Image (tube, rainbow, N blue to C red; front, side, top):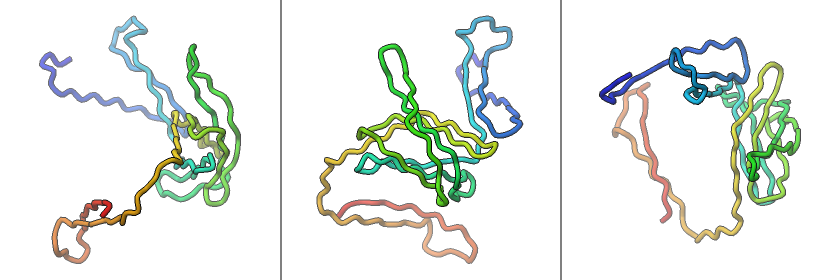
Length: 173
């Protein structure tokens, strides 16, 4: 406890055995009150994914290896919709599908928005996403502008093998 409100770092090492969805609780030593306990969860997985909603209310998913970025085929994907009602969240199954060779799968939504949760599984690896919202607005009108990108480097000349650092600014002209 820091009485001067200074910076305090606390690290907790949690060793996991394998892929999985893990839950943990943190509390002060000697605590007897459940209300003074915090709960968290994390996932150990090689899965990552990208989601995109198209104009036709189609949701596209790409399941990728989180380290290499390579697509992962034959992943079982279960889609659930999380919707708030007056008593809490209601979670309904939307569909089950599988990724093809390029890690891609898609499904149709009935609305221009979704509050979906995903469960991915292949072999021993499993990943359960948090809620991921997607919206599509087909009423956006873009003016005919020229899109440009200017790149800036941190120096004018580099030696062979030296790392090049750069920034870019995208704008309409």
